[in-house]
Image (tube, rainbow, N blue to C red):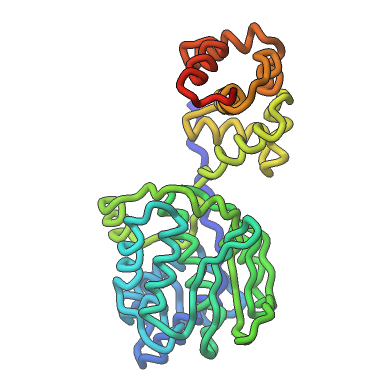
Length: 356
C-alpha cells in the first residue's frame, strides 16, 4: 500500500504591502488591527516587513475580518466607507441581467451611486471590451491597493456570474510598477502593464481590463440561491478555480466556419486558441461536447444556409460545407434533418423561403 503523498504547503505569494494597506485603514479609524492580524496568523513583526509575503488564504482572512470590523468593503481606499453588504447589493442588482454585458454595465452604474471618487465603465471598441476605472479624485497612499482591489473584485464577480474563466487580453494600470509587480499576473489572467496613460480632455488616470467583447454576450448562470451561498462564504480573492472558458465553444465554431473545407484537427485549432490539443479536448469535454460535434454543427449550419439562400447544386453545397463527396453529405444531412438536401430545398422553395 502506497503512502499518501504529502500535501504541498500553500504558496506565500501575496505581498505584505497589501496587508500594510489594510493596516492604514485601521489607523485611519483609530482602531487596533491586532485581532485581524491574529485571525490571519500574521504577527505584528511580520506585518512590518515590506518584502515579506503571505498566502492567499491569509490575505482572504485578514481582508474579510477587516471589512467586517471596519464596516468598510473598500478598506479605506475611498473617501467614504462602503458598509458591509454594499457589494452584495451590487451583485444582486446585476443578477437579473440577461447577459454579462448588461450585468457589468448595471454594476458600474450602481457603483457610481456609492462613490464619486472613481468611475467604472464598460466600453466596446473594435471587438474588445474595456472595463475601465477612472480616478476622479486623489486616492492618496491607498491608490494602488484601491484600484487593484476594485478591479480584482469586479473581475472575480464577472467570472462568478457566468461561471467561467475570463481570459484577459490586456491589464493596464495607471500607476507605476510597484516593487511586488510579479504578483499581478497571478491575480489577473493576462499580460499586465503599468504606467498606462490615456489621452483625454479630463486627464483622469485610467486603469483597465481588456477582454474579447464576445464575453459580454454570454448569459448569466447564477440565481438568488447561488448568490446567498456566495455571500455566506465571501468571494475568494482568486478566480483560478474557473478552469473552463465558456467563450471557447464560440471561438472554436468561428475557427471551424472560417475554413469549412479544412480537416481542423485539434492540433490545427489549439494554437489559434492559445491551448494545447489536450487542453482543448478536455475543456470541450467539460462543456459536454467534442470537436467532432462542433464540426457537425458548423457543417449543418453552413449547409442549411446555402440550401436556403443559394441555388448551388447539392454537390457544390457539399463541398462548401466541408464534405468529401455528395453521398456522405446526403447521408449526414438526412441524419440531421430527416430529409435529403433536395427535399429540404424543395420544401423551402414551396414555402417561398428559397430564391428562385
